[in-house]
Image 1 (cartoon, rainbow, N blue to C red):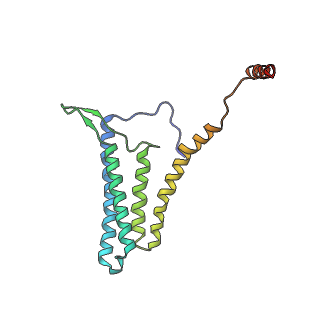
Image 2: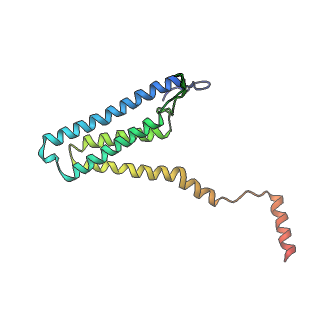
Image 3: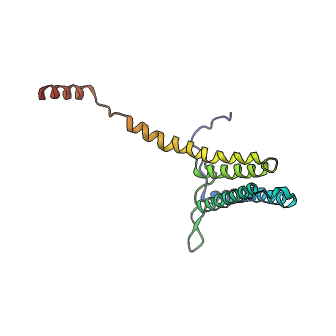
Length: 172
C-alpha cells in the first residue's frame, strides 16, 4: 500500500492533460491494432482459422476497438481559440473513476480475448464480461440507489408525530 499524501492533491495543467491524452490514445490504438493484426495474420496463415465464429467475433472486436477509440478521442478533444491558445483540454482520460476508465478496460478485454481466442474458441466467452459489467455498474449506480430512495420514509421528529396523532384522534 502506498503512503498517503499529506495536503491537497496536485492538479494537472491543461497542456499536460492534452499531452497525456494523446499518449493514452496512441497506446490504446496500438494495442487494438496489434491484436487485430496478430489475429488476422493467424487467420490468413492457418486455413482452419476461417470459421464463421472466428470471423464474426473478429468483426465484433473490430467494432469494439473502433467505437472505443472514437469515443475516447471525442472525450479527449481539445478546443483551441483562433489565435491557437488552448481553451479547453478535453476530458482527462487518465482520471480515476471516470467513464474513460471503463472504455480503456473494454479495449484491454477485447484485445486480450482476441489474442487468447487464437488458442481456443472458448476464450471468446470472455466477451460476456462486457454486458455483465455493464449491468453491474447500472445496478450499483442507478437502480439500487433509486430503489433505496423510493423505500425511505421522510424523518418526522417526535413532536410533529404526536401532534399528528392528536389531530387524528380529534377527527374521529
